[in-house]
Amino acid sequence: MEAVESAPETLPDAPERWDILPLLAEKIAQSGITPLEVLTGAMRVAWNEAERYQAASKEAYAMGDDAAALAHHRKMLAMIGKASEYAVKAAPYIHPRLQSLQQKVDNGPLEIKIRRFFEESVKNGGRS
Image 1: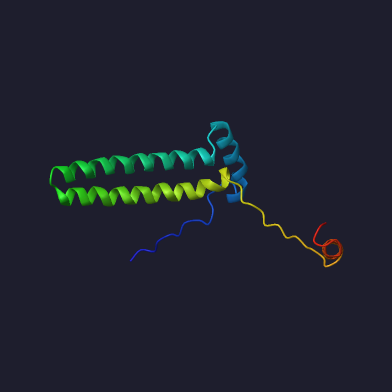
Image 2: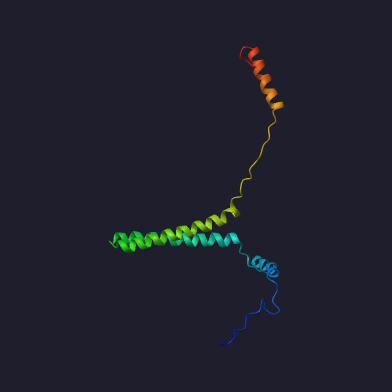
């Protein structure tokens, strides 16, 4: 049995894996396509395919071919699932997440002002 020569860890004269990222980013920027465009494009293609399968399913059902109608319906659901996956991935680029706000309220000035308003209201017979 012949010994198999193992592949080298890195290719000769190949840039390190992370060194190539700026080059890739530059090429992507020059191409004019963004990740959002890729995701929304893929989402639209999947959605259009889902609509095509839906039409084919309705047509097969109308012709009495239940097996074909079911097969097209399953493909339609799969494409809707794909479109949804792309939509979820694209959403952060379009809809920024709301930051949760933490508001601290002391028991100091706010409570005192409410108490004073209440006491004055009682003194005036319910009128402020």
